[in-house]
Image (cartoon, rainbow, N blue to C red; front, side, top):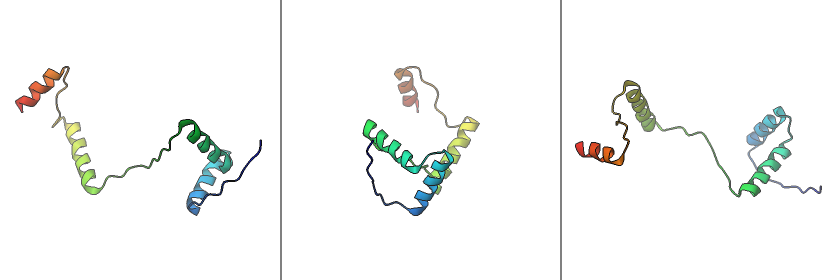
Length: 92
């Protein structure tokens, strides 16, 4: 199979980390990149993911919400029908 070369610019740290992970998996980095390119062609989409870290205000609200859930406070009841939901909302 004929091959071609793609030159890309990337952060040196990113390249080093990716190469190390690929090596631990027993793969050359080129194989990993080819796999991503094939997936891109097949699915015609690009997915960017990064763990989200809430800011201080959001983290505080999440902590309060988690505490309320653990204590069973500020929770709405379970509704089986839309009518039950509307009856509850109208009672507030």
